[in-house]
Image (cartoon, rainbow, N blue to C red; front, side, top):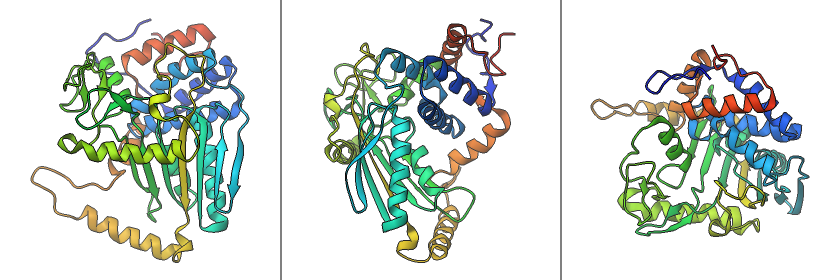
Length: 362
């Protein structure tokens, strides 16, 4: 396959080529246009902003889930239990990105009418980077908040077995500048896809982020059987935040709670998993003039970035690092790890789709 040996620099591939490859592969699998567009958009959000654990490397997994029947290739999404500024979306076992983009679109429409819109989502699946959907709200002038749950992989504080999922929380707020203020975090110390990425790269994990089967800390990604909650010695905070995401995502929507969800990694790729999600859109101009809000955000961010850093350090606003990485990757392309290269070559051969420039053999 002419892949680079371990230790050499990774190839960098333009985002447009990766997007075309993803859409073409999913089309070959029989995925509907809306689902393949949403899945690709969410993955490329992750890859562009340097969130590689939730980026284009997920494509082979999604192909397996669609092919096995876990994900509905042509779902029917419909709203239920709606009144006023709230609604529930039954996603029909759709890809999670399809479900969550649709949920946020409806939340924004509600916010345009009521000043705020909230949508709980059931019968969804893994949605990738939560920030992708929060940013979509910010592009419409709203503050966007997103939460989701997933299968058990995170121990409780001082626990020794899996309980919560990584249960992400994201928020994006218009800033009056080029990019929104952006928070996108797992309530675990790291997402499990980060463990998989470190396995692929042959790198040790940071201390205190993962545990072996007995609940003991490990740096070896091959021994990581569960993740630690966010917060280290104060992990009760991360565990509680995971519970907040659980209640809003599954409790409100009627989806499965984390311990009830079949594992993302199989071996069963035939049974839908019924994950939950929760999205909220808030119109700042329902509270004060939009210009006043954005001027306030500009003052706040200017003061934050001007705050005196520790020696040898720098102060950044949430999202600054990711947006800078997006600018860099727009120029040099998106790095593709070795395992993903191998998987993409296999997809290319299976479905007769040319690899994106930069990965083509030779």
